[in-house]
Amino acid sequence: MAVPIPVAAAPRRAPTEPWYREVTREQWKAFVAAYLGWVLDGFDFTILTFLLVDIQRSFTVSAALAGALGTITLIFRVAGGIGAGTAADRWGRKGPLMFSILWYSMFAFFSGFATSFRMLFALRALFGIGMGGVWAAGMPLTLEHWPAHLRGTASGMMQSGYSLGFLLSSLVFQLAYPLVNRSNAGWRVMFWIGVLPAFLVLFIIKGVSESPVWLERQRHLRRLPYMLALNFGAVTGAVAIGRLSEGALGRRGAATVSTLVGILTIPIYVWTGNSLLLWTGALLMGFFGAGNFGVVPAYLNERFPTVVRAGGAGFAYHVGAGIGSLTPALVGRLQDLGFTLPYAMTICIAASGALVMLLMWVGPETRGREFRAVEDKRQMT
Image 1 (cartoon, rainbow, N blue to C red):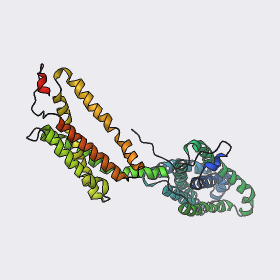
Image 2 (cartoon, rainbow, N blue to C red; image 1 turned 180 degrees about the vertical axis):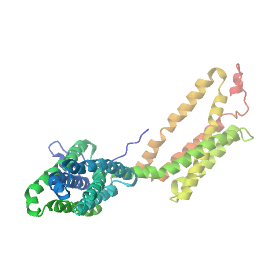
Image 3 (cartoon, rainbow, N blue to C red; image 1 turned 90 degrees about the vertical axis):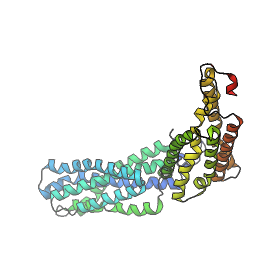
Image 4 (tube, helix red, strand yellow; image 1 turned 30 degrees about the vertical axis):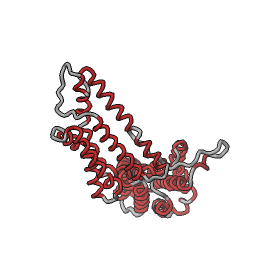
């Protein structure tokens, strides 16, 4: 079952309070960083549409070839989106966003120094990689910071950034381009202006926190190796303890020894912060603490006569599982009473283990009991 990951959220506003007051300072910072990155990305790309005629004259190329500068940018934008998106999933949203902004700023700037059309073509392709990366890393950074009920608002505002970038590029072209366009070289100045977004990275480094959702996901992933060790121990332990119950210890003895050793391994698994001890504790806890259940199917089925075996064993097993389902609530209750999580887990696991051992010894030993079509009821007691 998927576990919902909590995100940072501001308290719900009063009905008369404007929505933007719900958004915390940290959430606004994440929005501003990604939004400006997308606005300036849009500026650097769309300014090209106003410069194509002069670029065509500078390099004496056809209109179709000059227009291909936009095409190659958009094609390589796909590679940037995939690459930065993959990196953002693995290493966090913030780093790939900063890298993408630096990347497109750098190649926008370098485009102004192109000495041939082929060089400009290659530089615009590389620019496209950064352009795609900004959206892939910036959008999740913002949306994972914002409250769920305002995510649509954030989404709309974020996407509008590209159009604002287009608006800015048209204004700059109309107002500033005539002032710098000398000897048909004004297009180079427009590309040099494209380096300005690089300074946005300084704000992101200092003022923007990593996505809380991604950080929580990383905490879950760090637990995964120990969960694998725990479950590997449980798989092998169930087989081994089930086999052990065939010997002199019997069903009750094997389950008791396994449960007792499992309880003794709790401090290793719950209390230590050492990776090696956590691995060891998880493996032992799984092998002994969960391996004792390898005896349960045989023991329960041997307790009931054939005529009611399936119903009786099934009822007993699932009633036990139902009682066990109370454990998470009990752990939470103990935390509410002031116990730390390790203490609460230790108490509940130890109490559960003690109850298992007690119940095993209340009933008879069943090892070697044969199943018959018609059984003496006294055999079942």
